Image (cartoon, rainbow, N blue to C red; front, side, top):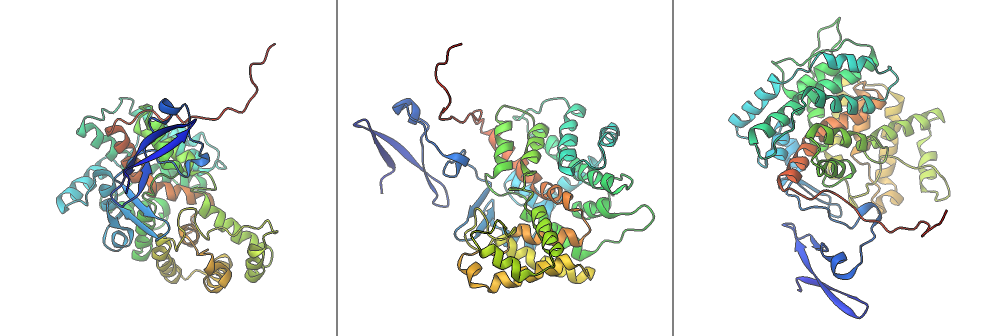
Length: 421
């Protein structure tokens, strides 16, 4: 097989090398395309464009494969904690017991934020969208940590990573509690990372909070499943903002804003809003499945199929069982969740959906779990961001340590030419 590709243009032939990844993915290296030919590529949405080489996450949408640093997502969800997976993504290997204890201890020691951040939080109305609040608070961390991180210093990078991992769930829980009118609280040094998240989110001031192993397990799996997903919109945003040598906090704040969109992190929110609309119309799932199959009907079935996975979303297989366990554990009697079960059952047996591989995806099941836990719909994307944080950190570190050039896409200009006043 040739290790290059030839392009013929204006009776001239130009040769460009192939680049190959460790999973046999192949691409054409076109760094010199414009210099050699005067041409650029046109690829809206960058669907066929590789922006970087990365050793963090591999996914194969056709085969339904997702691996972090070579480990299958199924194995990680079954055998690892979220903090272990975060360490794996950021540092490249699963931690030893000693490394895990040290990492956890460092995070615990930094699990406090400057009280002045409460003043910033109080300036937002209760109606503010949680993602806007979280993005602003994350950006505000820069004001309390103004010194730029030296990416060549392992100690400085470690400190920045630990600070963000420690403070981010506090900011997320405060965002949730402000909307609920609950007092703001901090982490408990005796609890694990995910247990702390559950406690900070759900603990009421007039009651003792009791941890549910089923809920903690479901949250742990949700965070792991969302921890990274290759070069998606928010991750690409973090990398391209960081390519200007913007700091870690600023880059992650930009990633939060990118994740906010309904076509990205807001998809699980859209699932619940769809279910609520179906309930308001009588709750007839068969009617809406028929509408979904009608090409002339504007109704769109949210939470089924995936832009990347052309097979069953491997994350959905894992979280489906966790969703079933949560609903059983909490004994939830919710008509919205009954509608979700009806849609799931029909989609998995209807030839139309089976043939097109329109299976329920991770957004479908995560939305169900969050609703069962009593998390407001607008907070769903914040929960997604909590999981994606270590992936954003890992991608930012990889990009900076490789000293990748500043991101600067080209364009095909289609406006007016040489106008005169």
